[in-house]
Length: 455
Image (cartoon, rainbow, N blue to C red; front, side, top):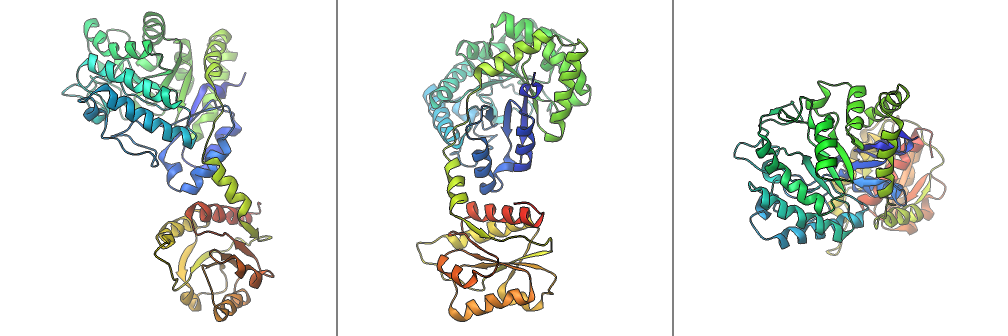
C-alpha cells in the first residue's frame, strides 16, 4: 500500500516537485514559489503532464490569488453582494485558465460565514454574513469550476467565520450552541448537495462537539460530515504544519486521529515533512492503531477520483528542449559571471529588452552568477566561468568574443542571430534562438547541472 497517495504535498520549486513525485504522492499543491520563474513552472507542468495525480492551488480569487496567469477577481466579499451569475462566470473563467495550465483541482470556494469580529484570515475571502447567501454563492462557484473541468473544495469545515484568531499561528476554541453551528454548516450542506469534490477541515475546536480540533475529530468528520451530511467525497486536512495543530500534536498523533476520524488526505505543506508523514501512516497501520480497512477506504476514495494531468503549456517546454542547442561538454564549478552586451538595438516590435532584469535574476538563482557588462571584463580575474550573452555581433565584435576563451573558461550564449554559431563551433556555446525568460531559465538550469557533473 502506497501511503504517500494519502498526502497532498506543497511544492515551491522543481526540486520539491521531483522529491514528491519520487514518493508517488497523491496530490500536488502548487505554491507561489513555483511561479517566481515562469520557465520553472513550465518545466514543472511538463513533468506533471500525463501523470495520474491531483494538481491544485489555493487560487480563490481576491484576497488569495496564487497563480499569476489568471485574471484577477474583485474577491468573494464583493461578489457576494452581486448575483450568482457573476460568481459562476468568474469561477468558470478562472477554472478554464487553471485547467489549461494543467491544474485539475482548486482549493475553493471558501464557505466560512463572515462575522463582524472575524479574523483577518477570513477577511475578503468570505462571500458574506448570511449563511443562505454564502450557500447560494457556494453552489454557483462549484458549478463554475465543474463547467471548467476542475474539482472544487469547500473550506474550512465546519466554518472559520466565528474565529477571532488565525489558525496558522494558534488554536482557538469556538463556543457556539448547536443552533448557531447549524448556521455555519448550512453552506457546506448546500455544497455537498451540489456534489463538491473535496471538503477541507479547519484547525479549530468546537467545544459543543469535541475537545479536539475539528481536523482530527471523529465527531466532526465521521458523525457530522460523513453521516449527517452524507459527504462521500474526499476529506482533506488543512496544512498539518499550521501551529494550531503542529504545536500540540505530533505527526503520529495527527495521522492516527485524522484517518480514524474518516479523513482521506493530509495536506503537508513542506516537502521535508512528506516522508515522515508517510512513515507515520505506515507505522500506525503496522501497530494496528489505524485499521487496514480504514486506510483502504481512504485510498479507494482518492484513487476513484484521480485523473491524468493535461497541461496545454507542457508543449512549450517540449519545444524549448527540442530547439535549444547546447554544445557544452562539461563545466568547472567556478564563480560565474553573466556578461551582458554593452548596447543592443531593439526594434519597436521587440520587447526583449524588458526581459533582461528577469534573466539576471535567473542567472543568480540557478548559477549564483554575478552580472556585468562586456566592457567591465577588463577588471575581472581569470578564475571565473564566463557566460557570454550575445544578442548580435559585428565581425570586429566576434573577434572580441572569441578572445574571451583565452583568458577565461567561456560559454558563448547566442540568442537573436543563430548564424553566429558558426564562429563559435570550436568553443563551448549555446544557441537559444530566443531571449525569453522561458528559454533562458531552462538554459541556466542545464548549465548549472553541467557544473555539478550532471547532464
